[in-house]
Length: 271
Image 1: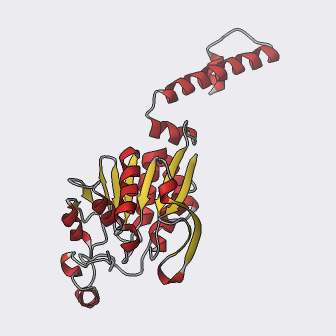
Image 2 (image 1 turned 45 degrees about the vertical axis):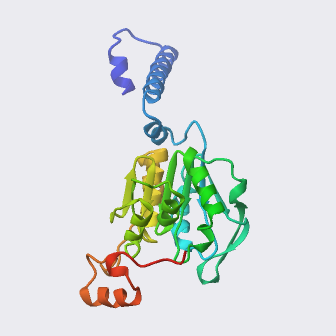
Image 3 (image 1 turned 135 degrees about the vertical axis):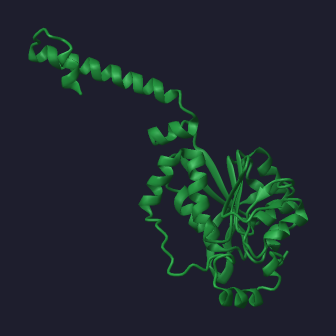
C-alpha cells in the first residue's frame, strides 16, 4: 500500500525523506480510521476497538436451590468480554447453596445493590427464595433502571412475578413456559427472546447462547465471537432431543410423565 502512495510522487526522495512521507501517510490513515470509528454506534465501536468507553456492571441475582449452569454458562462468556464487571448477589448475601448441594460464593446482598447496567435472574425448580415480596421488590427496583433486564430458564418467572414483564415476550424452560401468562408476560418458545431491553434464554443450556447474544448487544458481534472461539463453544450433541418438537416421541412421553403438566408448558415450580 505504501509503495502505491509513493508512486504518486515522481520526484526522487532521499531515504530519510521517503521515511518521513511514509510516516505522514500512515498518520493520516490512522486519524481517518479513528474519526470513522467514532461515528459508529457504541456496540460496533466496541467490536472494532476491543474496549468500551464505560465499564458495564452485570449482576447475576442468584439464590438458594438455584441451577448452577443457568448462570455459570453465561458467566463463562460475559466474564471474558472487554470492560465488563460481573457481580453476584443473593437475598441474604454470603455463600449460597445451590441445587445438588453446590456451594457458591461469597455473594453480595441483593438489597445492598444500588443499580446495575444489566440484571440477570437464572432459574431453578425451587424459586421460593426469590418469590418473597421484599426480594421481588429489589428485583423490580434494579430492573427499572437497568439498561437490560434478562433471565435464563425459569428465572423469567421471577422477573414476571416482580411485575416487570407485563405485556413483554419472554422465553422460559419449555416445561414451565405457560406459567408466564399468570403474571401478564407473553410466553415465547424461542431459545433466545429479545423484546426491547428485555432478553431471555430458554432452559438451562440456552444460557450459553443467551450469554453470546447479550455479549454481542453489549460489546459487538466480534467480541462475542472471539469469546465463543476462546471457550470452543461448538455444540455438536450426540442426540437431537433437546426440545419436545424434535425429541423422539418415546423419549418425549417418558419426560412428560416425569414432569407433570409439562406437556402443556404448565409444570409448576416451587414458589
